[in-house]
Amino acid sequence: MTPKIGYDDPLFSRGGISMESVSPEVQATSRKNYSAILRAITDAGQVNVADQLVVHEATISRMKQPGGDIERVALILAGAGICLNSQTQVTVEREVFESLKVLARANLDTVDATKV
Image (cartoon, rainbow, N blue to C red; front, side):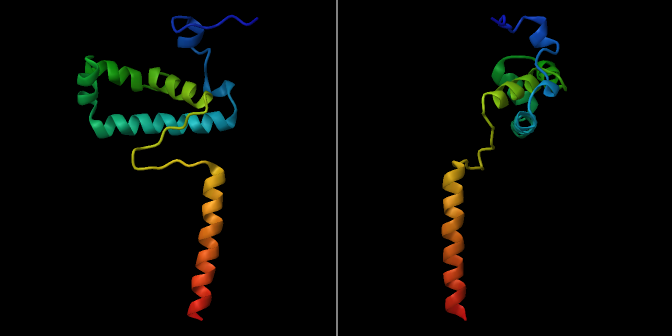
């Protein structure tokens, strides 16, 4: 049985979880998550985020650094199959999306045929 790694474990905090050790799909999702988190912090304002969390702004800066807490959390979320989106984006199941594309294409073809 593989031992579990805790947050205080040096493997977790110092490289046990890395982009290089996961699949390309998880890497891509992790990068999207990392960017979404950084964008959200920028949009909200780093000082405001720090105030909301009752921490110093420098703490947020350290967390944002490459290899920092935010990057690791983004990787963990990606490993769990979670892809973060901004509040202006909508996520639907792929099957629903593909169905909507088919219906839209059929409708567009019908509209084009009536104009001829």
